[in-house]
Length: 226
Image 1 (cartoon, rainbow, N blue to C red):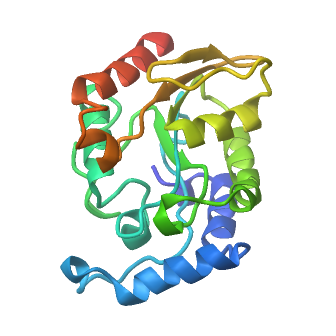
Image 2 (image 1 turned 60 degrees about the horizontal axis):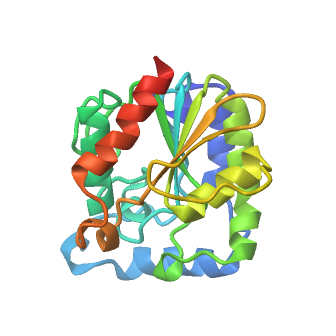
């Protein structure tokens, strides 16, 4: 199910998609959409902020960094159309959270089961590095999203950036828990935060993250959900 089908989430989606608060990100996402990559010359790039998607009653919330310039910035769906998404959805499929390991376009039939995927920053940033100001400007969207997704029990943070943002939104915890792959932290009130290396090419090509390592994160999430 997509946000447009889920009442208040549809209002948030419209606000996210129309956002122009960060001039540097607006300029970059639109430049990429105009210039394109040769392999995707025939694509009509999304070129806007990317909303979260999945099951609105999800107990598992997955938080990434930001849309990839030629991935979600092209397709309009988080982690869709790039190698990071191939790794992520492959793992979600193997652990029972997705109906398919394929993530090519918004209309490819992919569905999430008991999971919702979102990001810390909604626009593709230059060099995949949002500024602290951009991070903080976008954070209220995640705060509202988490409030509306009121069935969640486990949050998986893909990478240190997402880990830090989630702790800002759902914390604070003192001392601040250190990020690590398979790090596990009980959050204030309720819920568990799990850390995972981001399925970026930098991590997957070098072997820092393997498929069994990624599967272990979502298997642990499955165990926590019962």
